[in-house]
Image (tube, rainbow, N blue to C red; front, side, top):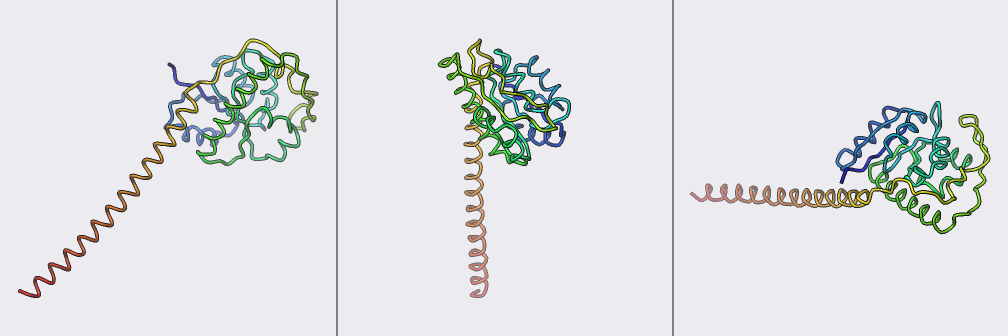
Amino acid sequence: MASPKILIVDDSKTIRMQIRDMLSNVAFTVIEAKDGAEGLMLIVQERPNLILLDFFMPRMNGWEVLQKIQADPALKLIPVVVMSGRREDVERTVPELFNYFEFISKPFQQAALFKAIQTASAKAKERQTASTAKPTAAAVTVSPITSSAPSTAAVANAMATSGAAGPEMHPSIPVVIDDVQQLKTEVRQLREQNASLHTEVETLKHRMQQLAAFVRQRM
């Protein structure tokens, strides 16, 4: 089985490098895009198993990218983690977004990223179930986008309508993340044991030195 693909879409090269480093010990194929337009092109070409999407970007912002992929039945079920350092602005602009996609505030740590990936995968699965169970669900009305994102009237109708399923989330994503977390726990435990053994060895050395000194005094 090929390794799952994760697409990072962010106009900050620093952020992309940081996320790539966080994923370096996990069996993911990481691809990058520097803005929304390039990100959408790669989504269509590469069909990633998960998307890490910055919300505020030049050329095409994250909300526009989401609307495009939700309008495509072949892409609409890809798990998405939306990223931004301005959570309040995102909530005010598109509050419904949090019901469908996972959100993570910048800056974030590796553990928070892994948790967001797992939650995004779960939400995508829920969308798939809802799409199958409610093929005629009504469209979701949203607030207009601010100056950094052209206004729209609703989330793409395809989010709630039936259609061909898009790329399924890679079954190994949560498993791989759990394995990494378990390995980290085991490494931490081994380090603690090593530190304890080191302390005991140092204590024994000190006692042996004291014993040797006592013997020399008696000779």
